[in-house]
Image (cartoon, rainbow, N blue to C red):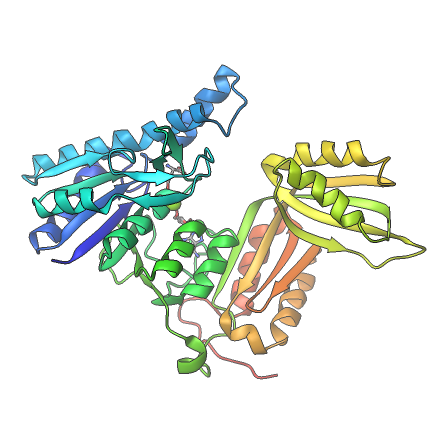
Length: 418
Ligand code: ADP
Ligand code: ASP
Ligand code: MG
């Protein structure tokens, strides 16, 4: 029989009415003969509500065992309710937690990685005709402590279960029609993509498009899981994440830019007047790495009279800590001045088609200049260009770029050879 893994996000299970709608949808697939594993997120807003409760206690160890014990309860509520709704419709169903499903992770609390899944248990339940409803976002360490997989982690639970069960498809149901050229809640004219290459989806996810968690995409790539993103409340083809080699079979038609991603969760730190000598960047960044502060963009300006400036970005939640850490090192490292801004955002244009087209960067910078948007940092790779801008310009920049690269619905996508 064919196994389908169907994951429903927070909005999809955000009310009893929605849970009942989802249960009917799942029953339809089950009646057609599929063996089904449902993975659920917490009801919309529940994870944030739980985090706020910890903050009210004054609890500051946000990456701990207790945080995970607390956060995992959101998914337990929705899984139990989903199973009840399925039972009410006459389906045999059981809800299981990450622990009961045998989803074993490392002990990196709040950011745990899945090590293995007990396939036997799933097969036993499925073969006895049950619809298995699994709590997304959570697992258990080998010592029996509950872990969570990072925000948006239910996507990863679903893909990992699909990989373990060699499911036919992993369907990610959400509140939009699929993966769009950019966030459809920001750009009205954003276009749904029928297909997106795995490589592009990986970039989109890593650069801030929360429609899929990055780890879910990585997992799919490693284990060849077929993912389709669909709207829970509307019939439609959704978006298929394909492993096709766009280079070889449709290079001429491949659009230069297939998507625009953005991340508001950035903060910039600039160190001015540091000595331009070997080992300085290593010392500065080493201090941050030992405090587990992840660095994103790094830019060093050209040196003048033996001194240079270094700019880097961190997650907004790490901003204060990063500033304090470099301030403590200022005297040691001869840093003349430290300046920062936590109201910045990163915007990235992505597309495998841009590999051989230098013109994409020129167009991007021209559009930003025309709108008087200052670029604070730039990073590039073969298939993406990212710029850091003031957060207040984010929406203007994304909309202008979306239109400049002709990505709107109905726009003729064309390739300009320069
Ligand atoms: P869920 O709770 O179902 O997991 P998320 O809120 O995590 O849903 O992800 C869906 C949201 O992702 C959409 O509502 C949309 O605002 C956002 N999003 C960002 N970029 C894109 C994109 N390129 N295509 C589709 N949705 C996007
Ligand atoms: N409930 C978790 C979150 O809000 C996991 C998820 O929804 O995927 O991040
Ligand atoms: Mg999500």
